[in-house]
Length: 197
Image 1: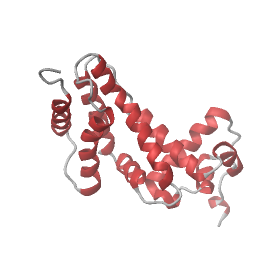
Image 2 (image 1 turned 45 degrees about the vertical axis):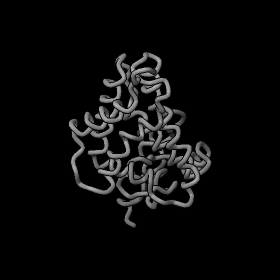
Image 3 (image 1 turned 90 degrees about the vertical axis):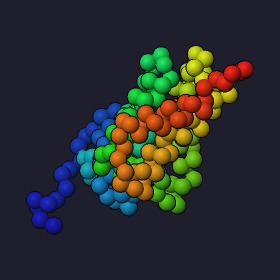
Image 4 (image 1 turned 90 degrees about the horizontal axis):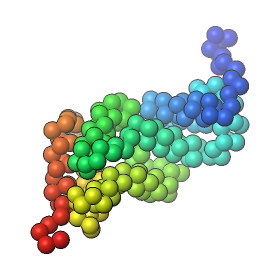
């Protein structure tokens, strides 16, 4: 290694600045090199922090990766509150479709489902938390009487997101607004109050 290739000395980042730098570096490495490339050493080097600082804050590589995925996806997918369940779902899933249409979004989805013995037992809670977070849109629709009282928030969210994920993972079919609208309307038709309810 020549002197010009030597890694830069770690920066003295602390607190939230350090956290943001490390999470950004983790997402970048996950997107470009996959799980194998997102080692703590590589993340620390990319973020310009000491490896011990990463371990001190996250304890394990698995904690770091899940925090990075959660933070990235939750900030990229805000939960809208328009006052109407259909509009909320259209906004949310249109944003998701746009994210999944990017190289980073596709990479993050693949990483979220890729087999990895160190992460597999943590994936259930990770996806449950994402469903719970998105399910608030459905629960608000139930409270407003737009949806049946027994509408299952997680099932409705999965009914729309599942086909989007399948298209990204298994085909080259486009993720456009017409698809999102069709999926949302199809899912909502099954969740609307029925006569006599």
